[in-house]
Image 1 (cartoon, rainbow, N blue to C red):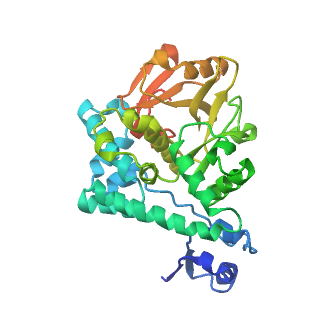
Image 2: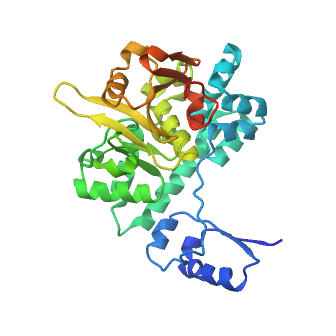
Image 3: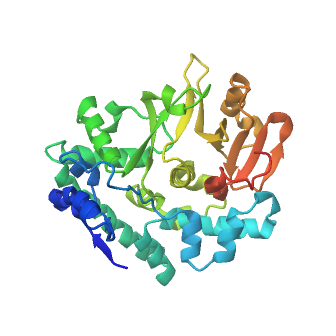
Length: 353
């Protein structure tokens, strides 16, 4: 009946090593430990193999956000088949999703939004969280330069959805230095590396290209705050993909897929002279690979998606996530889904999959 919770355990590596003896000598005691930069602590000690169960906690998903606000019917509707949603229900969910874009899924931010409905107050909480991350940067030394970490962090946040190069993340520092900062931020789970791969077979990671990659941020709310997105003007946008040039929509989809999937996502990119193509994400479902695009354009504007479907005909269909309602174009192998379906791509409730 007793739970022992040890917070910030990374400050005491010997406590991590002692977990083995809790397990062996007091097996009836439930022990939970938590802390920031735990992976850094693990690198410096002997971790008790087979004695620990790991749980990586993501920011709250859109569904969890709705539940926290007491909007259970809307939360359940967002998980149901999108083909059954009325236009009114769809528009209500999209309106609330816009608020989530700026609030994000950090629990304290969601609580603040629930209690105050003030995005300005939420922004103050987000600033405090970002400041705490910056304070942690001192703990990364001598692994890398904290100034480089700060610049790389901002560059990644501003470049969500874009293919990255280490040399361009911080022009003051060298490519290897930038890479070290990028890898440390990835290890700390503040950012997530998304590698390009060949979708000809599984597992996708087997063909991942470590030199061709994009990145997603930890949380959409923190991302827009770090980028100083002007909330007063951007929140007036009726199309979610128009907000901050579509970057928040791409971040949202990546964040939802990471939280509800295997914890790793990839994308497709082909670089040829005068014929470059890129598909935002790849979804593996029931052993088959689906290209996923975050686009608001018509079917004819999805050139890269059509090209991948032609290049890899074994792919059953292309999925397009936008602010639009559900629809299908079977003759073009396209399924249009609302953005809020990003977390449900592996469910059985989406017709056509």
